[in-house]
Amino acid sequence: MMRIGILTRNENSWCSAQLREAAAKHGFHPVCFSFPDLVAKVGLKPRFSLDEIDLLRDIKAIIVRPIGRGSLEEIIFRMDMLHRLKRLGLYILNPPLAIERSVDKYCALSLLEEAGLPVPRTVVTEKASSAKRAFHELGGDVVIKPIFGSRGIGSTRISDPDVAERIFRSLEFHHQVIYLQEFIPHGNYDFRVFVLGGRVIASMKRISNLWKTNVSLGAKPVPYEPTGEIKNLAIKAAEVIGCDMAGIDILESNRGPLIVELNSQPGWRGLQTVTSVNIAEEIICYVLSKIKRM
View 1 (cartoon, one colour):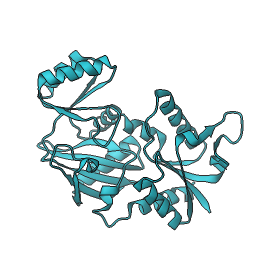
View 2: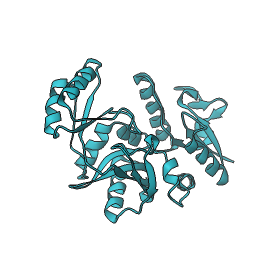
View 3: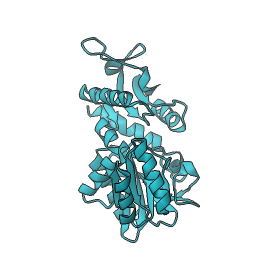
């Protein structure tokens, strides 16, 4: 039986469990593991091992779920391993370069803008004084976000200049990058579009009582059929970042749709409740198609 790796912080999470079930249904033996479980060798064999498993011999592909927190050294080493596994012929979903690009909000947004895709006006700096000027440049109503992170955690809307300045000074003092984005009035809803293999397989509208529209923070998912424009934006965004799979968040604004964020390791628990598509099965079938072509 072919083995497929599921690289996850929590093998009992809902998405990981869905992937395990779908993998088994399609004839795979799913192997869940986390980065600390791996041993990498140079000049010795096996080059990568997981207990008694030789990854390059015994695993046909790896699906990467959120890589988790870690020190700078740990994160760099984890990405080094993914890059080497890919170089040595293992199929990885998503490719390591796409993961690196997407987890860094500034990197992802700048690549999207350079490709001509619509994104919110954003200023990123390390200096509180520069952030103060940017606050006014962006209209005095901004969202401060951690440059790394997801699910809306740590994102704060600020419209008071005194509060903004105190936050900027605190971030500078703690050697954190200040990521400022104009607040886009959006009626407390947005769209999540799930792209796999260059096509939209599912989407939802997320409706909230607050400006944050993350399902994990209480937003309600409802069925949504995206327009051709929205589909094309999402597919192009995934292509620009290099993602085989991505969740793209899009807001409607008075300037038209804007791509706010792209997640290369998207969850789909909320999305699954409003679509008839079995997302985990789609992912496994896609991975199987990639393996067959290798």
